Length: 159
Length: 159
Length: 159
Image (cartoon, each protein chain N blue to C red):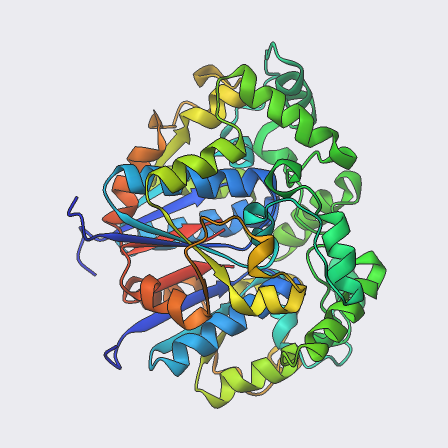
């Protein structure tokens, strides 16, 4: 594969299993030499939060800050969430099978130079600031940035 | 970007937040000069209904007509729906941040010449007729139409 | 369309309606002469299980084996599942409208030479073996195989 080939993935979901899929595909693309971009928006922003409490002013911003407290290690799977038990079971199942936990997979993305962008509009709506996100986020960007990348990509996915 | 570049998006979801994402990406693509097509199928059809009561004959058609009454302004978010409260909170949050409501975003799509197609097979299954949909829908189409568009598109997404 | 054009679809979801959408798009692409690949991962694996009881050793493997018993005919829709009633209603609605049931659609995919791959990592995690899957599955593959296919495809979707 030529080094200039690109992959652009919208990470809209904040479900543990879907974020997992996004990171696996992203590391796979990066390992294959592709220029890979993850564009985190809406619930997907939970995968790149530091996990520290969020100081939102609005009611829903506060509520989501509380319900999404803890960052990437507190994401629930899209099925079998059982009030948090599903997450623990999944984590155990992953470690039993020597599958890297989400935080480690995210670090692998970073190590492989996967480009991580956060969606400006979603951050504004949810009252999430730059300081609430991990420092490795390359940029806060609008949808136009994503579209420009995606239109020049071999692979585009919405997860 | 050349004006002949295309984007094709399947809008399968009827979740408020995902329809929102679809409209934002579509307006972004159209604003960038791309020929943009939204193919509404399954639950996504709720985003292009007029909101008037649907006269389905079958039991499930009736049930879905009732549960999906009200058109685009009654879509619930994929999280925090809370029996309709989530929708109201989201709408408030969006207006607080000067984000256009869904109906206005749909109008922007129309104004920017985003091509809106409705899936024939889903309409048949759910007993939705042309009259149940907003007049701006360009065509009722089969999956073959979507595939032909998608295969010639720079960007294809399934939302 | 040239015969060498390709479509690659990740079937991540195990929801009846989304698997349905994946099969419809796949048959459409295959019918249009495209080389079409379905890459089943996570919950999507339920769509290609034989339906026989799964002999997982781990707790979550066992639990998922039980909850996902029955194979493709036991998938629930993403909405209106109602503890299994939604599935029955959907099936009835589909047969009323002469829409093929999922199992028949899957067979059509096979007849049209849609290439079906199962994700190795998901199978390991969920303790699913080759014998748990229908014999028509062409291969057990890693994410690298999918990425290679997808990068050479006109259409890529994540469902």
